[in-house]
Image (cartoon, rainbow over all chains, first blue to last red; front, side):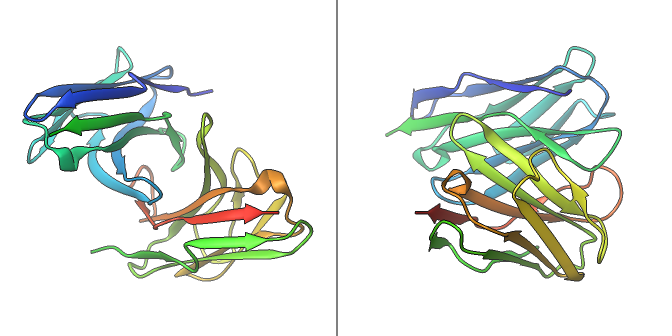
Length: 112
Length: 113
């Protein structure tokens, strides 16, 4: 059974710092990996989707990488801002279907 | 932009009541999903549907049922609500086929007293 782990569970940084969030998964037979953002009490907003054949995807200050063979993904946030404060979740889709398996998230706080 | 809406942001019900949570998407997506989110347990899949009148059990279907009579609407039903079903419920939709991006609604915070 696929298991997704995110480390650290919480992270607090000063504004302007570059930071990396980590995601690991136990079964490398994935179709893709998706990063989401969740603000308190709200739904999930899709940030980046990386197909298993890709190494990375970029959107603005966000860059996500994928190393399928080692079961790891990172989300890099450049020049962090207080508005980036949220919980970031990664989720994988297995090659066997459309279901997502989620990690528990990293709660990010960017201090002004 | 994809829009997924859920009928209520907050809902309070009593134990034993029948509860309906509605989800509507406006992008003609084939796939629709219901998750619940709990502290320490993350998001867990309850049910999903890949076509009208089709449904598949997720990881935690016990105590829930679903209905998909129209492509744009996916309903989650709690036949007899219990306190352990107090949770945040999230609906998502996505195009058909394997591994397509999922888009989420704003969530419904359900409290069962």
